[in-house]
Image (tube, rainbow, N blue to C red; front, side, top):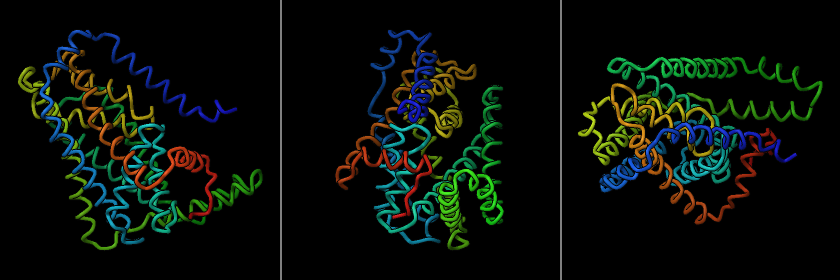
Length: 344
């Protein structure tokens, strides 16, 4: 049944509705409107600029991760990145990353599994950067227990995944043998496909081309996350929260850490609801004491800044390259189900 095939989408929508209800259940809509009308929206111009600087830096970092495989110009990398982000707005579980890998692989005649391997490495770097940010924040801010526990659980999951990647890369034959033993007796055709995907994927997990590239990737990662944090600070100024609630500089750091947990964990399409509730609850912490109604207004505007420009740029690139939204969506589900074609 089609509804069973769409269970992830339905689960994502359910999560969105749950967190939207949690975010709105105690708000005063009159206070929300007051916050909307009192905001100085000129601050949003530099905020959008800083977010696109972050996208540009992320594009450059991706090129360094791809260099051992092929030197790729920045234009197709940026296009694939933005279109992938576009689909993350509509699809659950970060399926836009599959589209991002597919588009670049198609343009450059690469294996999409190999390209996807570099995206996995990018995500691991981001998680490492997130935990460095969290470690810094813990030094200056007493996180509540639920945030600490969420951080520990996420860290454990990512560490386990990283360990599996390292072991599979170092000992590929046992991994392929395990796939054979598990799937060959019941689904030989699937076993062959999985082994092909694993082999291609592992080719994407490669050392950087030059020793100096590790420093460059580190610096780019720091700048990317600094841009994300500064974007929060600019919107706090837009709503005059810094002066009104005497917010310390650590507010942006706390917002960055807590909301990023909601973005990293696959959930609702576009992180609608989860992002808003986490942002609202972060500002409502006792150290900040921003009322829930204006805090939710801030969350709505911050979310819009993160996603409306991506919608505009992503749809423009999609149209300019003559790509089909439905066709790429079907391609994402094809990758998700493991029914990958031979890389084209």
